[in-house]
Length: 77
Image (cartoon, rainbow, N blue to C red):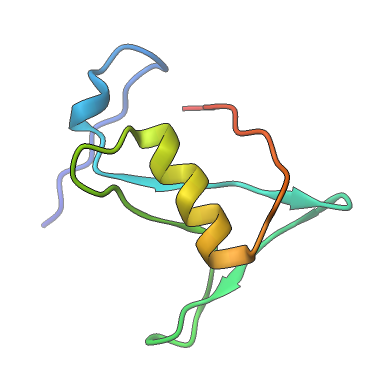
């Protein structure tokens, strides 16, 4: 069984956050990407790389998965 913990924003050390999920809107609509292996629609996101901040991971994943060129990322949780 997977154990899930919830924390308030900025109450946990960044190094403990292992992956980012990016809730993205474009022209007022939520953005989903098709997962290449599972053939499911998912929000952009992924695991952070070694020595990468979670905000950098979120930016990298958004670019890799959607091709976005201009965006602002704001943590929500």
